[in-house]
Image (tube, rainbow, N blue to C red; front, side):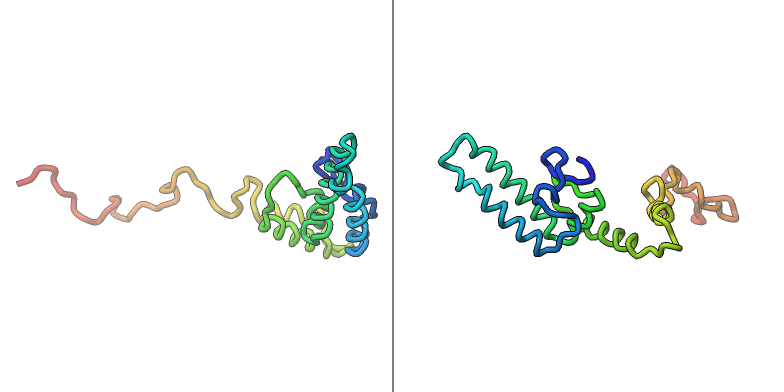
Length: 161
């Protein structure tokens, strides 16, 4: 899938609806209604040669509208991160929306995209575990007790009396 997206092999949702990237919600809704009427499968039932293509086009129009009419999904889609084959993951969309908002609010003379990316990698860590220390040996950082033993309780003998 290219940056434009779409599960039809790369056609942009904007191209499917025949609108520009800066289209308003009203423009998106108008384009959707026009194309939904044009390609609705019920309209093509009497012409089986076109019915299959009409159904496919109608599904593409619905998919494009469902993404572009939802501001969160649209932002994630515009960033090139929307995958229509995955189930909706609201937490991921919310996280990406927040990241996109942060990137859009970057001052031109301030942090660059690379700086934000570096901050993000520092937050989650380059190995994906962030600030957590995933030490293989949990006792490696423990200090021995002053008397050298691990327990202050007296040892019991293994034989019973």
